[in-house]
Length: 345
Image 1: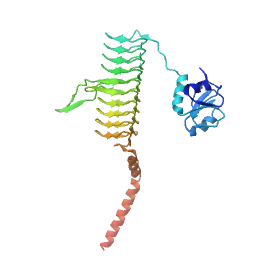
Image 2 (image 1 turned 180 degrees about the vertical axis):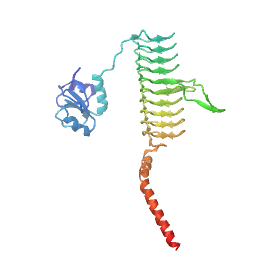
Image 3 (image 1 turned 120 degrees about the vertical axis):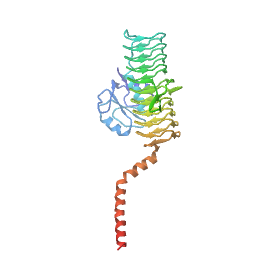
């Protein structure tokens, strides 16, 4: 599969500088580039390295150059690079059909061109939309609904009643709709609170490998449209995650927390229960948000407990000075003690 520089530029609405007839046979990193490859130089620091490589074409931001190579200039090189990658690596097409080893319950409705892989178990009353793919070893509980064009990789589990929208991608090992962590202590033991709600995943969501999304105690746990959930994330019962938010690896969200639209929770962020996170909030890596905390729209917070990022930076800077301050205090104490000893003579 090969495209000319001009053909690629037309597909991403880019401007060609140099020879547009050069044939591009693939996309590569700058370090591994060969003749016939296109490389991304998102920032000026990468442009010189791309220029020195064997690549035939550089994708860069508007205003970059000059170059001995063919250039494609766009306002957002990284987004354009993603679209180019799809040209050379189109999505895998899975043949429609139900594998003989799959177990299908009663009252199941399968849409057109659905693909059901080996050793899949589908419970009673399940609905699967057109062109959906259910990979090997998946378990779909009773009453689940899966929208059209959704793609489940291997060993995904949906508990009973879970609803998944259209064009949702769920990676291997994810579990959606397991019981929320609900217990109450009485008479020396933990009494389980029945988790009788559901989990709902709206359209165009991507869920990473080994993610766990709990069902609600009552009502629903909701993952909004276009949310991106990285690997190993835990989302507790009755949590709402707003449209377009990003949850990085190992994020944990406690029960009944609301995360607004367009938020970013960086790696290993921990959010306790009953927290309200406004829209467009950024929570820095390894931060901890205390129970009941409210974060305003657009805030950027960091630290544990999470505070406005400038205050957290000041605190960390002060902590770095603590050894020197302790030495100064020890010196001052010795001087005071010496003065007191002299005055007592």
